[in-house]
Image (tube, rainbow, N blue to C red; front, side, top):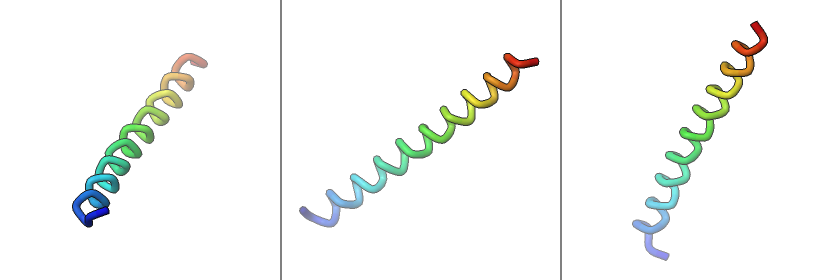
Length: 36
């Protein structure tokens, strides 16, 4: 594997991770508001 391919994988993984964290936060906030 070339360095470019490795970097592309790292960047994609980072983007997916950010999105996943945002979704988790959104779900927690939604659950919190449903309790009120």
